[in-house]
Image 1 (cartoon, rainbow, N blue to C red):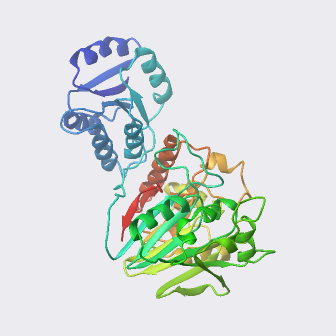
Image 2 (spheres, rainbow, N blue to C red):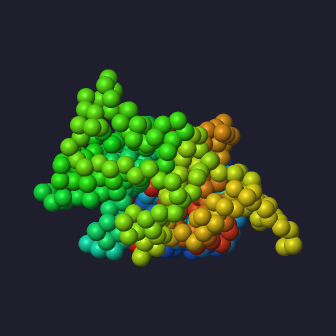
Length: 439
Protein backbone atom coordinates (compact mmCIF):
# COMPACT_ATOMS: atom_id res chain seq x y z
CA UNK A 1 0.00 0.00 0.00
CA UNK A 2 1.28 3.47 -0.89
CA UNK A 3 1.90 5.96 1.88
CA UNK A 4 1.38 9.68 2.32
CA UNK A 5 2.93 11.61 5.22
CA UNK A 6 1.00 14.62 6.50
CA UNK A 7 2.76 17.12 8.78
CA UNK A 8 0.17 19.44 10.29
CA UNK A 9 -0.75 20.36 13.84
CA UNK A 10 -4.47 20.28 12.95
CA UNK A 11 -5.53 16.95 14.49
CA UNK A 12 -9.05 17.18 13.02
CA UNK A 13 -7.68 17.48 9.49
CA UNK A 14 -5.39 14.51 9.97
CA UNK A 15 -8.23 12.41 11.42
CA UNK A 16 -10.46 13.10 8.41
CA UNK A 17 -7.72 12.08 6.02
CA UNK A 18 -7.15 8.54 7.29
CA UNK A 19 -10.47 6.92 6.20
CA UNK A 20 -10.57 8.98 2.99
CA UNK A 21 -7.11 7.76 1.98
CA UNK A 22 -7.84 4.16 2.97
CA UNK A 23 -10.72 3.99 0.48
CA UNK A 24 -8.25 4.94 -2.24
CA UNK A 25 -5.67 2.38 -1.31
CA UNK A 26 -3.35 4.69 0.62
CA UNK A 27 -2.09 4.57 4.18
CA UNK A 28 -1.53 7.67 6.28
CA UNK A 29 1.46 8.64 8.38
CA UNK A 30 0.89 11.81 10.36
CA UNK A 31 2.94 14.11 12.55
CA UNK A 32 2.07 17.26 14.45
CA UNK A 33 5.52 18.84 13.99
CA UNK A 34 8.22 18.81 11.35
CA UNK A 35 10.86 17.20 13.55
CA UNK A 36 8.78 14.07 13.98
CA UNK A 37 7.75 14.33 10.33
CA UNK A 38 11.37 14.21 9.21
CA UNK A 39 11.97 11.05 11.26
CA UNK A 40 8.94 9.37 9.68
CA UNK A 41 9.92 10.44 6.17
CA UNK A 42 13.44 9.04 6.48
CA UNK A 43 12.31 5.78 8.08
CA UNK A 44 9.19 4.94 6.05
CA UNK A 45 10.05 6.62 2.71
CA UNK A 46 6.50 7.66 1.76
CA UNK A 47 5.58 8.44 -1.84
CA UNK A 48 4.15 11.86 -0.90
CA UNK A 49 4.77 14.35 1.93
CA UNK A 50 2.25 17.10 2.65
CA UNK A 51 3.78 19.69 4.99
CA UNK A 52 2.24 22.78 6.59
CA UNK A 53 4.43 25.83 6.00
CA UNK A 54 3.97 26.85 9.65
CA UNK A 55 4.52 23.40 11.13
CA UNK A 56 5.90 23.56 14.70
CA UNK A 57 9.64 23.19 15.42
CA UNK A 58 10.72 24.39 11.96
CA UNK A 59 8.89 25.82 8.96
CA UNK A 60 8.11 24.01 5.73
CA UNK A 61 11.08 25.59 3.93
CA UNK A 62 13.54 24.18 6.45
CA UNK A 63 11.80 20.80 6.42
CA UNK A 64 12.32 20.61 2.64
CA UNK A 65 16.00 21.49 2.98
CA UNK A 66 16.53 18.98 5.80
CA UNK A 67 14.77 16.19 3.93
CA UNK A 68 16.60 16.84 0.67
CA UNK A 69 19.98 17.07 2.40
CA UNK A 70 19.43 13.62 3.95
CA UNK A 71 18.63 12.28 0.48
CA UNK A 72 21.64 13.78 -1.32
CA UNK A 73 23.13 10.39 -2.08
CA UNK A 74 19.84 8.82 -3.15
CA UNK A 75 18.53 8.76 -6.71
CA UNK A 76 14.90 9.28 -5.66
CA UNK A 77 12.76 10.79 -2.96
CA UNK A 78 9.14 11.59 -2.17
CA UNK A 79 7.09 14.31 -3.77
CA UNK A 80 6.87 17.16 -1.25
CA UNK A 81 3.95 19.59 -1.26
CA UNK A 82 4.10 22.60 1.05
CA UNK A 83 0.78 24.22 2.01
CA UNK A 84 0.60 27.81 3.26
CA UNK A 85 -0.71 31.31 2.60
CA UNK A 86 -1.20 33.10 -0.71
CA UNK A 87 2.04 35.12 -0.61
CA UNK A 88 3.96 34.78 -3.89
CA UNK A 89 7.32 34.87 -2.12
CA UNK A 90 6.35 31.81 -0.05
CA UNK A 91 5.68 29.84 -3.24
CA UNK A 92 9.06 30.82 -4.69
CA UNK A 93 10.95 29.99 -1.49
CA UNK A 94 9.22 26.62 -1.15
CA UNK A 95 10.09 25.57 -4.70
CA UNK A 96 13.70 26.67 -4.31
CA UNK A 97 13.95 24.81 -1.00
CA UNK A 98 13.06 21.58 -2.79
CA UNK A 99 9.27 21.36 -2.76
CA UNK A 100 7.54 19.90 -5.82
CA UNK A 101 4.40 21.97 -5.34
CA UNK A 102 3.07 24.80 -3.19
CA UNK A 103 -0.64 24.86 -2.34
CA UNK A 104 -2.64 27.64 -0.79
CA UNK A 105 -4.77 26.79 2.25
CA UNK A 106 -7.32 25.39 2.75
CA UNK A 107 -6.67 22.10 0.96
CA UNK A 108 -9.82 20.57 -0.53
CA UNK A 109 -10.21 16.82 -1.04
CA UNK A 110 -10.59 17.14 -4.86
CA UNK A 111 -7.07 18.62 -4.90
CA UNK A 112 -5.83 15.65 -2.92
CA UNK A 113 -7.32 13.32 -5.53
CA UNK A 114 -5.28 15.06 -8.20
CA UNK A 115 -2.24 14.87 -5.96
CA UNK A 116 -2.53 11.10 -5.57
CA UNK A 117 -2.93 10.65 -9.32
CA UNK A 118 -0.01 12.88 -10.20
CA UNK A 119 2.64 11.84 -7.68
CA UNK A 120 1.47 8.43 -6.58
CA UNK A 121 3.11 6.40 -9.33
CA UNK A 122 6.77 6.36 -8.25
CA UNK A 123 9.26 8.17 -6.04
CA UNK A 124 10.68 11.28 -7.68
CA UNK A 125 14.38 12.09 -8.18
CA UNK A 126 15.46 14.97 -5.99
CA UNK A 127 18.47 16.80 -4.56
CA UNK A 128 19.19 19.03 -1.58
CA UNK A 129 18.91 22.76 -1.48
CA UNK A 130 21.99 24.95 -1.36
CA UNK A 131 22.57 28.18 0.49
CA UNK A 132 20.77 31.15 -0.99
CA UNK A 133 22.70 34.23 -2.03
CA UNK A 134 22.00 37.15 0.24
CA UNK A 135 21.87 40.86 -0.35
CA UNK A 136 24.48 42.89 1.44
CA UNK A 137 26.59 46.01 1.33
CA UNK A 138 30.35 46.40 1.19
CA UNK A 139 32.56 49.48 1.28
CA UNK A 140 35.50 47.61 -0.27
CA UNK A 141 36.63 44.30 -1.61
CA UNK A 142 34.74 42.65 -4.45
CA UNK A 143 31.00 42.50 -4.92
CA UNK A 144 28.63 41.59 -7.72
CA UNK A 145 25.07 42.82 -8.21
CA UNK A 146 22.43 41.87 -10.77
CA UNK A 147 20.44 44.67 -12.42
CA UNK A 148 18.99 42.77 -15.38
CA UNK A 149 18.68 38.99 -15.81
CA UNK A 150 16.21 38.38 -18.68
CA UNK A 151 16.90 37.60 -22.30
CA UNK A 152 15.48 38.89 -25.59
CA UNK A 153 13.08 41.56 -24.34
CA UNK A 154 12.07 43.15 -21.01
CA UNK A 155 9.23 41.23 -19.40
CA UNK A 156 7.67 43.19 -16.53
CA UNK A 157 4.58 41.90 -14.75
CA UNK A 158 3.30 40.02 -11.71
CA UNK A 159 4.69 36.69 -12.95
CA UNK A 160 8.28 37.97 -13.17
CA UNK A 161 8.49 40.28 -10.16
CA UNK A 162 10.66 37.97 -8.04
CA UNK A 163 13.54 37.38 -10.46
CA UNK A 164 12.94 40.59 -12.40
CA UNK A 165 12.05 41.53 -15.96
CA UNK A 166 14.98 43.72 -17.10
CA UNK A 167 17.45 42.50 -19.71
CA UNK A 168 21.14 41.78 -19.15
CA UNK A 169 23.15 44.05 -16.87
CA UNK A 170 25.55 43.04 -14.07
CA UNK A 171 27.64 45.35 -11.88
CA UNK A 172 31.04 44.28 -10.50
CA UNK A 173 32.89 46.40 -7.93
CA UNK A 174 36.58 45.71 -7.44
CA UNK A 175 37.56 48.15 -4.71
CA UNK A 176 36.75 51.55 -6.23
CA UNK A 177 36.68 50.17 -9.79
CA UNK A 178 33.20 49.80 -11.31
CA UNK A 179 32.82 47.33 -14.18
CA UNK A 180 29.40 46.92 -15.82
CA UNK A 181 28.69 43.82 -17.89
CA UNK A 182 26.26 44.61 -20.74
CA UNK A 183 23.83 47.47 -21.19
CA UNK A 184 20.39 45.86 -21.30
CA UNK A 185 17.40 47.61 -19.78
CA UNK A 186 18.84 46.87 -16.32
CA UNK A 187 21.39 49.61 -17.02
CA UNK A 188 18.72 52.24 -16.39
CA UNK A 189 18.07 51.40 -12.70
CA UNK A 190 21.83 50.94 -12.21
CA UNK A 191 22.37 54.46 -13.53
CA UNK A 192 19.75 55.88 -11.19
CA UNK A 193 21.38 54.11 -8.23
CA UNK A 194 24.85 55.38 -9.18
CA UNK A 195 23.62 58.98 -9.42
CA UNK A 196 22.03 58.67 -5.99
CA UNK A 197 25.24 57.14 -4.56
CA UNK A 198 27.80 59.53 -6.06
CA UNK A 199 25.66 62.71 -5.99
CA UNK A 200 27.96 65.49 -7.26
CA UNK A 201 31.10 63.35 -7.32
CA UNK A 202 32.49 62.32 -10.72
CA UNK A 203 32.22 58.70 -11.84
CA UNK A 204 34.67 56.61 -13.83
CA UNK A 205 32.69 53.70 -15.25
CA UNK A 206 33.70 50.77 -17.44
CA UNK A 207 31.10 49.05 -19.61
CA UNK A 208 31.92 45.67 -21.19
CA UNK A 209 29.59 44.72 -24.06
CA UNK A 210 29.35 41.01 -24.97
CA UNK A 211 27.51 41.68 -28.25
CA UNK A 212 25.16 44.21 -29.76
CA UNK A 213 21.82 42.44 -29.84
CA UNK A 214 19.12 44.78 -28.57
CA UNK A 215 18.69 43.14 -25.17
CA UNK A 216 22.36 43.91 -24.40
CA UNK A 217 22.52 47.56 -25.51
CA UNK A 218 18.95 48.92 -25.24
CA UNK A 219 19.55 50.46 -21.80
CA UNK A 220 22.42 52.69 -22.87
CA UNK A 221 20.30 55.61 -24.17
CA UNK A 222 18.66 55.74 -20.71
CA UNK A 223 21.93 55.57 -18.70
CA UNK A 224 21.78 58.76 -16.62
CA UNK A 225 25.51 59.01 -15.74
CA UNK A 226 26.29 59.37 -19.47
CA UNK A 227 24.40 62.68 -19.48
CA UNK A 228 26.66 64.39 -16.91
CA UNK A 229 29.85 66.05 -18.27
CA UNK A 230 31.82 65.27 -15.09
CA UNK A 231 31.54 61.51 -15.72
CA UNK A 232 33.78 59.26 -17.79
CA UNK A 233 32.27 56.15 -19.40
CA UNK A 234 34.62 53.77 -21.23
CA UNK A 235 32.85 51.18 -23.36
CA UNK A 236 34.70 47.96 -24.25
CA UNK A 237 33.66 45.51 -26.93
CA UNK A 238 34.65 43.64 -30.07
CA UNK A 239 33.89 44.67 -33.61
CA UNK A 240 30.64 43.33 -35.04
CA UNK A 241 30.32 41.41 -38.28
CA UNK A 242 29.62 44.44 -40.46
CA UNK A 243 29.80 47.56 -38.28
CA UNK A 244 32.02 48.90 -35.56
CA UNK A 245 30.82 49.07 -31.98
CA UNK A 246 30.40 52.84 -32.02
CA UNK A 247 28.29 52.77 -35.17
CA UNK A 248 25.92 50.22 -33.64
CA UNK A 249 25.59 51.97 -30.29
CA UNK A 250 24.98 55.35 -31.91
CA UNK A 251 22.70 53.88 -34.58
CA UNK A 252 20.02 52.93 -32.06
CA UNK A 253 19.92 56.58 -30.94
CA UNK A 254 19.57 58.14 -34.37
CA UNK A 255 16.32 59.74 -35.47
CA UNK A 256 13.60 58.46 -35.72
CA UNK A 257 14.47 55.84 -33.07
CA UNK A 258 15.48 58.23 -30.25
CA UNK A 259 15.24 61.99 -29.65
CA UNK A 260 18.90 62.43 -28.55
CA UNK A 261 21.89 61.23 -30.51
CA UNK A 262 24.92 59.65 -28.88
CA UNK A 263 26.98 62.72 -29.88
CA UNK A 264 24.65 64.88 -27.81
CA UNK A 265 25.23 62.95 -24.60
CA UNK A 266 27.20 65.40 -22.39
CA UNK A 267 29.22 62.72 -20.58
CA UNK A 268 32.74 61.83 -21.71
CA UNK A 269 32.19 58.58 -23.60
CA UNK A 270 35.15 56.65 -24.96
CA UNK A 271 34.86 53.56 -27.14
CA UNK A 272 37.64 50.98 -26.77
CA UNK A 273 37.26 48.41 -29.50
CA UNK A 274 39.14 45.31 -28.37
CA UNK A 275 41.44 43.29 -30.60
CA UNK A 276 43.05 40.88 -28.13
CA UNK A 277 41.38 38.28 -25.91
CA UNK A 278 43.45 39.26 -22.85
CA UNK A 279 43.30 42.86 -21.64
CA UNK A 280 42.97 45.02 -18.53
CA UNK A 281 40.24 47.32 -17.29
CA UNK A 282 42.62 49.72 -15.60
CA UNK A 283 44.32 47.40 -13.07
CA UNK A 284 41.80 44.54 -13.32
CA UNK A 285 42.81 41.61 -15.61
CA UNK A 286 40.10 40.37 -17.98
CA UNK A 287 40.10 37.41 -20.34
CA UNK A 288 37.64 37.01 -23.23
CA UNK A 289 36.32 33.99 -25.14
CA UNK A 290 34.31 33.89 -28.37
CA UNK A 291 30.92 32.21 -27.87
CA UNK A 292 28.60 30.07 -29.99
CA UNK A 293 25.86 32.64 -30.59
CA UNK A 294 24.53 34.25 -33.81
CA UNK A 295 26.73 37.14 -34.88
CA UNK A 296 29.79 38.10 -32.87
CA UNK A 297 29.48 37.38 -29.14
CA UNK A 298 32.11 37.34 -26.41
CA UNK A 299 32.19 36.06 -22.85
CA UNK A 300 34.36 37.64 -20.16
CA UNK A 301 36.24 36.35 -17.14
CA UNK A 302 37.22 39.01 -14.60
CA UNK A 303 40.07 38.21 -12.21
CA UNK A 304 39.69 39.94 -8.85
CA UNK A 305 41.37 39.62 -5.45
CA UNK A 306 38.20 37.90 -4.22
CA UNK A 307 38.05 35.35 -7.02
CA UNK A 308 37.19 35.15 -10.71
CA UNK A 309 33.81 35.97 -12.25
CA UNK A 310 32.90 34.42 -15.62
CA UNK A 311 30.06 36.03 -17.57
CA UNK A 312 28.66 34.12 -20.57
CA UNK A 313 25.10 35.42 -21.03
CA UNK A 314 24.36 34.19 -24.57
CA UNK A 315 25.74 30.80 -25.55
CA UNK A 316 24.55 27.54 -27.09
CA UNK A 317 26.37 24.65 -25.43
CA UNK A 318 26.89 21.13 -26.74
CA UNK A 319 24.18 18.82 -25.34
CA UNK A 320 26.35 15.69 -25.67
CA UNK A 321 28.16 16.46 -22.42
CA UNK A 322 24.78 16.71 -20.71
CA UNK A 323 23.89 13.23 -21.97
CA UNK A 324 27.20 12.01 -20.57
CA UNK A 325 26.46 13.35 -17.09
CA UNK A 326 22.91 12.03 -17.10
CA UNK A 327 24.12 8.53 -17.88
CA UNK A 328 26.88 8.60 -15.25
CA UNK A 329 24.83 6.62 -12.73
CA UNK A 330 24.61 3.64 -15.11
CA UNK A 331 28.13 3.82 -16.53
CA UNK A 332 30.54 0.96 -15.85
CA UNK A 333 33.58 1.90 -13.73
CA UNK A 334 35.94 1.43 -16.67
CA UNK A 335 33.68 3.21 -19.16
CA UNK A 336 35.09 6.49 -20.40
CA UNK A 337 33.12 9.69 -20.65
CA UNK A 338 32.64 11.36 -24.00
CA UNK A 339 35.63 13.39 -25.14
CA UNK A 340 34.69 17.05 -25.55
CA UNK A 341 35.24 18.65 -28.95
CA UNK A 342 38.20 21.07 -29.22
CA UNK A 343 35.76 23.97 -28.98
CA UNK A 344 34.14 22.54 -25.84
CA UNK A 345 37.53 21.77 -24.30
CA UNK A 346 38.67 25.35 -24.88
CA UNK A 347 35.51 26.69 -23.25
CA UNK A 348 35.84 24.34 -20.28
CA UNK A 349 39.43 25.48 -19.75
CA UNK A 350 38.32 29.11 -20.03
CA UNK A 351 35.83 28.49 -17.20
CA UNK A 352 38.07 26.18 -15.17
CA UNK A 353 37.80 26.81 -11.40
CA UNK A 354 35.74 29.99 -11.76
CA UNK A 355 34.50 31.20 -8.41
CA UNK A 356 31.32 32.55 -10.03
CA UNK A 357 29.85 31.58 -13.38
CA UNK A 358 26.93 33.54 -14.85
CA UNK A 359 25.71 31.37 -17.71
CA UNK A 360 22.97 31.32 -20.34
CA UNK A 361 20.31 28.84 -19.15
CA UNK A 362 17.27 30.08 -21.05
CA UNK A 363 15.48 26.77 -21.67
CA UNK A 364 14.79 23.44 -20.07
CA UNK A 365 15.75 20.33 -22.04
CA UNK A 366 12.30 19.93 -23.62
CA UNK A 367 12.14 23.56 -24.75
CA UNK A 368 15.66 23.40 -26.12
CA UNK A 369 14.72 20.69 -28.61
CA UNK A 370 12.49 23.27 -30.33
CA UNK A 371 15.18 25.94 -30.29
CA UNK A 372 18.32 24.15 -31.46
CA UNK A 373 20.53 26.61 -33.32
CA UNK A 374 19.00 29.71 -31.72
CA UNK A 375 22.16 30.42 -29.73
CA UNK A 376 20.94 29.66 -26.20
CA UNK A 377 21.35 26.79 -23.76
CA UNK A 378 19.19 24.68 -21.50
CA UNK A 379 19.74 24.39 -17.77
CA UNK A 380 20.88 20.78 -18.05
CA UNK A 381 23.71 21.75 -20.41
CA UNK A 382 24.72 24.66 -18.18
CA UNK A 383 25.11 22.38 -15.17
CA UNK A 384 27.05 19.79 -17.20
CA UNK A 385 29.60 22.38 -18.30
CA UNK A 386 29.87 23.94 -14.85
CA UNK A 387 30.59 20.50 -13.38
CA UNK A 388 33.20 19.75 -16.05
CA UNK A 389 34.92 23.07 -15.35
CA UNK A 390 34.86 22.63 -11.55
CA UNK A 391 33.01 25.90 -11.05
CA UNK A 392 32.21 26.84 -7.44
CA UNK A 393 28.98 28.82 -7.91
CA UNK A 394 26.62 28.89 -10.89
CA UNK A 395 24.03 31.56 -11.63
CA UNK A 396 21.42 30.57 -14.23
CA UNK A 397 20.99 33.62 -16.45
CA UNK A 398 19.19 35.04 -19.49
CA UNK A 399 15.78 33.84 -18.27
CA UNK A 400 13.26 33.38 -21.06
CA UNK A 401 10.81 36.32 -21.20
CA UNK A 402 7.92 33.83 -21.17
CA UNK A 403 9.13 32.06 -18.02
CA UNK A 404 7.32 32.90 -14.80
CA UNK A 405 9.10 33.09 -11.46
CA UNK A 406 7.68 29.67 -10.62
CA UNK A 407 9.09 28.12 -13.78
CA UNK A 408 12.54 29.60 -13.14
CA UNK A 409 12.46 28.20 -9.60
CA UNK A 410 11.64 24.75 -10.93
CA UNK A 411 14.66 25.02 -13.24
CA UNK A 412 16.81 25.86 -10.21
CA UNK A 413 15.52 22.74 -8.46
CA UNK A 414 16.27 20.64 -11.55
CA UNK A 415 19.80 22.05 -11.77
CA UNK A 416 20.48 21.32 -8.09
CA UNK A 417 19.14 17.82 -8.52
CA UNK A 418 21.55 17.16 -11.37
CA UNK A 419 24.54 18.44 -9.39
CA UNK A 420 23.62 16.44 -6.29
CA UNK A 421 23.44 13.22 -8.29
CA UNK A 422 27.09 13.72 -9.13
CA UNK A 423 27.98 14.33 -5.47
CA UNK A 424 29.01 17.88 -6.39
CA UNK A 425 29.23 20.85 -4.00
CA UNK A 426 28.37 23.25 -6.82
CA UNK A 427 26.14 26.06 -5.52
CA UNK A 428 23.35 26.91 -7.95
CA UNK A 429 21.03 29.92 -8.01
CA UNK A 430 18.95 31.74 -10.59
CA UNK A 431 20.18 35.30 -11.14
CA UNK A 432 17.76 37.77 -9.58
CA UNK A 433 17.59 41.55 -9.86
CA UNK A 434 18.84 43.21 -6.69
CA UNK A 435 20.73 40.11 -5.57
CA UNK A 436 24.23 40.99 -4.40
CA UNK A 437 27.12 38.63 -3.76
CA UNK A 438 30.18 39.57 -1.71
CA UNK A 439 33.31 37.73 -2.82
